[in-house]
Length: 142
Ligand code: FES
Image (cartoon, rainbow, N blue to C red; front, side, top):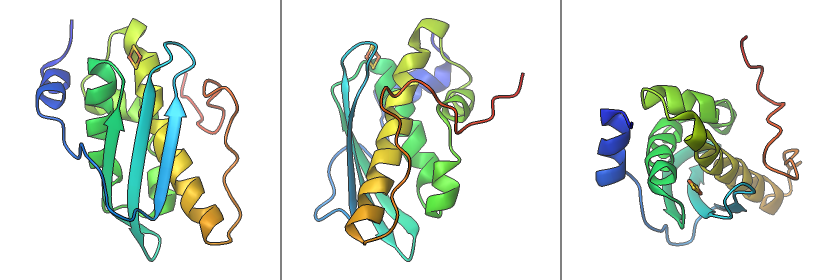
């Protein structure tokens, strides 16, 4: 039921762990299952030079976080904010529909960590959504 890429990122997660003195930290919970995600960012001149995650999530959450961290590493903050949970799932060759909610954890975590960085630096924060489920900042193609 899981693609090979999902299994690979689950068995060998990239960027799992902690960053010492991170520039931005995002801690979010998944409203669907209650699982948690922590994303830590090292940022230089608005470029994400390092990223690590820790999660109390399921296998799909681990795989999507691993892929999401790979996709945002080396990117500008703006580019990183464009990486949607849908793009992460696509990069993993898809997720079973019942597990799509797990991929939201990584995206929300990255957004929260970027927001933390911006606010700490006296810059306008992002509009973070309350429930973590209305992803209206992405235009979904129909
Ligand atoms: Fe909670 Fe997957 S079941 S993150």
